[in-house]
Structures are given as C-alpha cells and as structure tokens.
Length: 131
Figure 1 (spheres, rainbow, N blue to C red):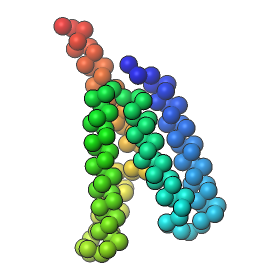
Figure 2: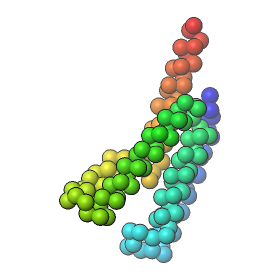
Figure 3: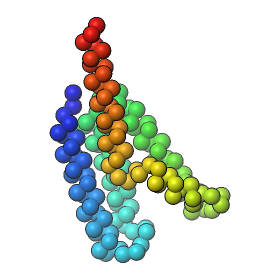
C-alpha cells in the first residue's frame, strides 16, 4: 500500500504553493482575472495533480484518474472556449456552475479520488486474503 503520509505531505506542499501563487497574484496583479501567475497556477495544478496521483495511487487507479482528470479539464476548457466565443447564451452560466460543482483548481478532487482508490485497494486486498 502506498504511504498515506506521502500523500498528506504532497497535498500540504501543494496547498502551500497554491497559497504562495495566490498571494503573488493578489499582490502584483490585483483585480485581473487573467494574469501570468493565474496561468502558471493552472498549469501547475494540472501537472502537480498528475504527479501526486502517480506517486500515491495504485497503477489501475492512476489510469482511471488520468482518464477522468483529462476529461474534466477538457470539459472545463471547452466551456471556457464556448464562453469566450459566445457560442451559446448560457455557456457563461454553465461555466460558473461547472467551476462550483468541480473545483479543479483545488486539491479536493485529488483527496476524494485518493480516498476512493485506497478503499478499493483495501477491499481488493481483503478479497484476495479470503481466497
């Protein structure tokens, strides 16, 4: 079983780095929704999430996570594209709903997926021991 201590330490490091990036954004780019720090933060969250889950989940769990993660980010950027180009009148509302429903730029989806992966890992091990 992958270490839960490793996961907790990596999540704490991720949160601290995100706080630092938010502080930089609020200090130097006040009131700007799109700034270089915001772009760096988004890219960092995407890459760090994949790295953390690679280190802390099972191989099968990581494959499922990677597919789900890429799909959720694809939907997110698809909604941003629709909103920017005003393809539909409701795309802005859909984007806000999606941002509130699935907070991709936070560690919450990682914690949830890691917890589910650990539950299935423990259940799988118990099932193998009963055989």
